[in-house]
Image (cartoon, rainbow, N blue to C red; front, top):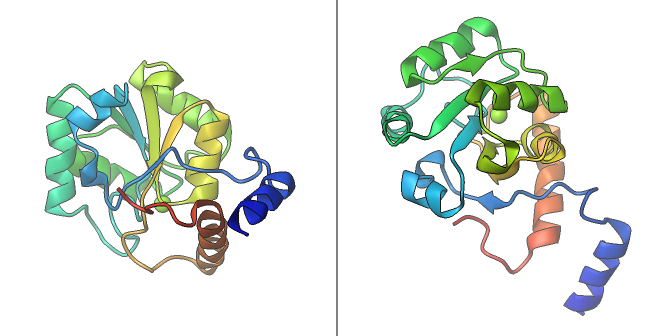
Length: 183
Ligand SMILES: [Mg+2]
């Protein structure tokens, strides 16, 4: 039964149509330097809202700041690629010690290419970390990066974001039923 359902899905929705993250973690702090090294990752592009800080918060939590600083100290290159407002992104950038680009233009590939240029790393050595399947995962995959999906830090957000989240959860659960969701 399940295999025929899988076959049906594969026929109707081939992989390039449904963006799938390479990895799902329950929070960014799960990505420590040893884990990144084991995956061959030397850099991360980071979404800001709902990935590093809740949309309603003014600053990242202390644990996220400590995580970012530990990765930087370990030599992991990072940059924030956010569609958010300039002042908000600049404040988070200063708190985390991570360079950032606001109004980045995700999901268009140029947003991720500019992020890679900022890291001075090839796409094969970098993962995009974000909370949105379409904005973060699909765009970064199209640009050749690996992708890590995190659940949103809060359920705040604009109405169109909340609608997309419902669609995302249907796509992810349909494609990954029976597999651990977050590791
Ligand atoms: Mg986000």
